[in-house]
Length: 148
Image 1 (tube, rainbow, N blue to C red):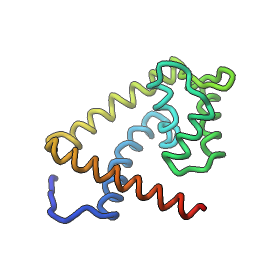
Image 2 (spheres, helix red, strand yellow):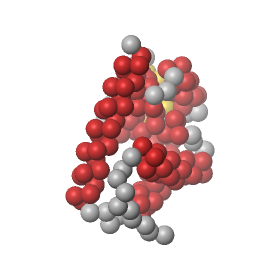
Image 3 (cartoon, rainbow, N blue to C red):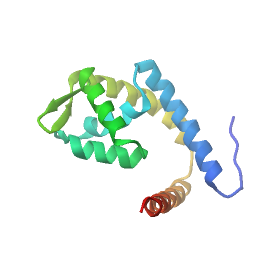
């Protein structure tokens, strides 16, 4: 089913799009035995050309997910314990098992992503990207102000 709307974007539309897309991702992750936060931690390590600093990975994940630092550390520890990541001093790197899993997830999600994003005009994607970047910046500023 395809529908378009002329209604302006708002927080509800953003939330609905986020949760719909996340549900697609989580269905793939569930089939692979991985959780959302685990995938968010695994991705930058899989994409890195070299080991990733554990402290940086923790901080970046906390910032991206607005997650609790202890929870993120626990997720990293769990990925190490499961053999998907390996620890080298203060760094982590992806293992062959972790890379194979990441590649399976990427392959499966890229098919769904092509169906979801395909056919949207480039100008619309650029405009949406600008708006989403601005909304993210403003929301992060609100969080920072509330925390001070």
